[in-house]
Image (cartoon, rainbow, N blue to C red; front, side, top):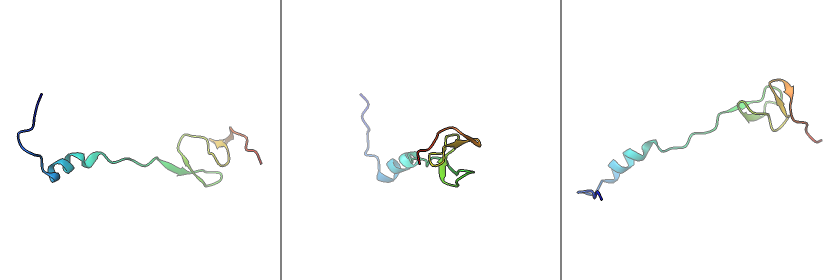
Length: 59
């Protein structure tokens, strides 16, 4: 089993981990109700996708 010869410094360790950050989901404004929604998904607020009603909302 490989064992490191010297202790890795904090800066060297953190430089390696610098690219582990999470990315935010691509939110866009719904063209009908202007609420934020995920792109290429049905709007959870109004139920429309590509100017067609896909999900009926209970009032």
